[in-house]
Length: 446
Image 1 (tube, helix red, strand yellow):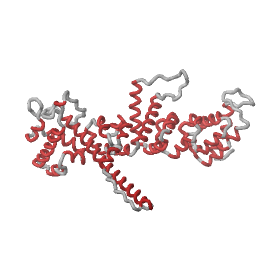
Image 2 (cartoon, helix red, strand yellow):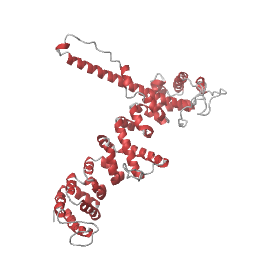
Image 3 (tube, one colour):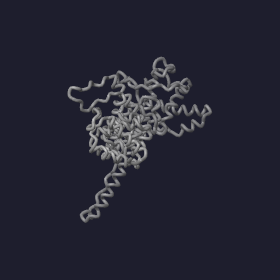
C-alpha cells in the first residue's frame, strides 16, 4: 500500500479554461472503480470484488463507507502500471504513467493528492446532504402532525364546524432552507485536510453550522467518531461556554490571566503574539481534556452557562489541574460554591469538603481574621485526610458550632500585636486552637 499523503487544497488554476472539470474526474474515477472490481475478480479476490459490487457507484461507496475510499484509491495507485489502469494515470506531459503523487494527471490536470482531497470533500458533502434531507423530512412530518392537531382542536369549535381547510403541502425541500446544517459543508471545508478524516465524514454530518462557527480551528483536534458525536450533542451556547472556560483556565496555568477591572494606572500590557500562540495551544489541550475525560464537569458547566466563567476564575487558583474532577463531583461542587470567597485561600483544595452548614457557622464569627488563621493553623496541624474528615463529618459540627461563642465576645485579635491582656496575638490564638483541634479529634467540645 502506498503511504498516505498529507492533503493540501488544490491551487486554483490561472484561468477558467485551465480549471479541472469535476464531471470528467467523476466519470474517470467511476471507470477506475469498475476496473478495480474486475481486476480483483481476475486476481483471485472474488470476496473483495463482491464487497465492492455492493455499491453501484463511487458516490454510493463514499456515502455508505467513506473510510474505504483512501485505501481503494491507494490500491488503484499501486496498480497504475497495469494496462487496464494505464489510461487513468497518464501524465499531462509526455503521455507516460505518472510516477509522483504530485504530478498532474491528464486530462483533468489534478494530482493524485488532489484527487484524494476532492473525494474527502465529496464524502463529507454527501454525508451532510443526506443528514440534511433526513432532518427536513423529519421537520416536515412534525409540522404536518402539529397542523393536524391544531385542526382537530379547531373543528371542535362551532365557528369551524362548517369549514374544513385544505391540508398544506409540507414539502421537506422547503424546510431545508431553515436547516441548522445550512452552510455546514462550506464551514467544514477548510478543516478537511488529512486522509484520516474519511472515517469522520458521517460524524461531521451530525454537527451544525453553529458548532463549526464556535469550534473553529479546534475541530481538527477531535479525531474519533465518538468525540465528534459528543460535540454534536452540545448546543452552540454550550460549546461557547466550554471554550471560554478552557481559555480562562489556560490563562491561569500560563500566568496570563488579566484582571477584569484593573486599578487606574495599572493597566496590564497586551498579550504578546508569542504568549497568545501558547495560550491557543493550551486552550486546545484543555478543551480536548474536557471532552475526553470530564463529561460530568461539562454537564455542570452547561447548567451554569455564563456563570461558569466566574466560577473558573474563582477556583482555578485553588484547585489547579484537579479543577475538573471537583466540578464533576456534585457534592464537592456544592460545597465549593457555598464556601466564603475570603476563606478559599486559607482552605485551598479543602474547600471541596466544607459543608454549607460549616461555612455558615464560620460566617457567624465577628472577626473573620480569626477563622482565617484557625483554618491556616489547622492545615499545619492535621494530616490531609484527617482535616478533610473533620470538615465533612456531621459529628464534628458541634465543635465548629462552638467557635462563635468562644471568640465573638472575649477575644480581641490582632495577629502581630504585642503580648497584653487586652489584645490577643497569633501565639495566643495558637494556644486556644490546640484545645479546639483536640475537640475535633474527639468529636466533642472539651
